[in-house]
Structures are given as C-alpha cells and as structure tokens.
Image (tube, rainbow, N blue to C red):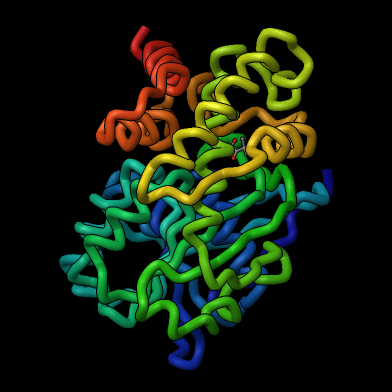
Length: 324
Ligand code: KPL
C-alpha cells in the first residue's frame, strides 16, 4: 500500500473561508472530514467528539483509505459539546454525521452554539431524525443529504471509502431553501453532490430501500448480493417490498415507492459485495439503526391501523439479535 498523502495543517482562522464542525467521527464523519479538507485545504474543519475523554483519546489525525486505494492522513482539531458550550463558540457550518439516534440530543446540546444562519447538514439514514430536527430548529438553515457512498471503519479514526456513489442535497426548511449555494462549500466533485429541490421524496425512497434490505441481511447473515442468490431470501425480499410499497401508498405523510423491488434489486446488484450498515453494526455488537428503518415504519403504520407483519417481524428479529 502506498504511503499516506499528508494534507497540510489547517490555516489559522480565516474569516473569508467557511469553518465546518463535524458532529460524530464514525465512518461517515471520518470520510467527510478528510474529503472536505482535501477539497478545500484553506478552510477549517473541527471534529466534535462525544466528550472530554474522547478528545483526550483522539490521536490527532484521521486516516482514510480512498476508493482508489490511496491513503490520506489529515490532522484535525477536536472538541466536544461541553467545551463548545463553556467557551460559547459559535458554529457557522455543522455537518451531522453521528448515528440517527444521537442527532436530536446532539443538536439540543449545541443549540446555544447555533444561530439561525448556521448551515446544518444531516447525513443520516431514515426519516424520523430529519422530521424531529426540523421541529426542533424550524427557523434554521437545515439541509439533508441522501447518499449512496459506502464507508466503514477499520478501527477508530481509520476509515475506508468503500464505494463511490452519488449524493443529493436538499433543504428541509424554508430558510435553507433560499441558499442552494451551500453545494459550493461541500466537496461536490469527489462526493458527486447534486442539489435536489425536493429532498423528502428521495429520503422516503432511500428509507424504503433500507427497510427492504438492511434487516434481511441480518436475518440471512449475508452480504447484500446474496439476498438475490438465496431462494428463501429472494422470496422474503419480494414479500417485504410488496408490504412496504403498500404501506407507503397508504400512509398519509409518505411518498409512494412504486417499483420498489426493481430498484432494490438494482441496489443489491450494485452493492453486491457490501456488508450492510446494519449487519456491520450487529457483527460489532453496536446499536443498529433498525428502529429508524422497519421500527419507524411500523410505528407510522400502526398509528393509523395499517398492518405490517413482515416489517414488524424484521424489526423484532434484528432487535432480538442484539439482546441475546
Ligand atoms: O444504505 C445501505 C446500508 O447498508 O445502510 C445499503 C443501500 C443497504 C447499501 O449497503
């Protein structure tokens, strides 16, 4: 493997350049921090880690294995919500890459550091988080990215960009809608970012795809592509897609997901060698996002009396895996 390319140290505060804070330093946080700094070395990027202990343990740099195999080593300063609150540091641009379950608590903690003009970009899977964040910060510049890039962590602060895909960036609030220029402040070429005037339909579509795929890869303990190779899994996938399609057609707040099975099949073919994020979490004994996928879909369905037996069963089986 070639020696890592070192990105030069960050410049001192430069009022002409955006300063990004990145909340969360898992696979996506490490990927985005590294790519952003490579894309715009004259801007500043600061990691927001969980707490003071995490800041003490942080090795000072992130290593990223890029999709072409080359290595990138970038030094970033790190801080934590406690420090930001005590110092009253204002945040101008915030990329939220932590797990969906931690978004609302993270944003609530940092609320005094944010101003309505702060650009806040959510990168999570699922939908609940986006809707909750919009309720918490209705007057803020809130955006969401729906992405098709694969990344995983070899170990803490050592990430692998496993697959280059595309990203769609769109506004969640009316204030954000007035500022599509944000796309210029993100690594739009490397990450293939497109501005999407209507982001919610895309988020619902991705949500439907995650509901169809992620839990089943845990139940069959297989890579994405193997869901198409096994007869039992294939049949299960077909029935689950039909149930999701039916639910999204009948849920008042949802966007329908026509031809879901065809798109899911395409995603599985394109990501055949991937281990889904949920199966990765299960294998590492980490909390999964299944409550944000099939769990949330069941909550929505059951609140209006729609039966969802297959999704409920996926949710319960995956949840049970972690508690045994
Ligand atoms: O988004 C994904 C995930 O693993 O979370 C899919 C689309 C299933 C690709 O692996």
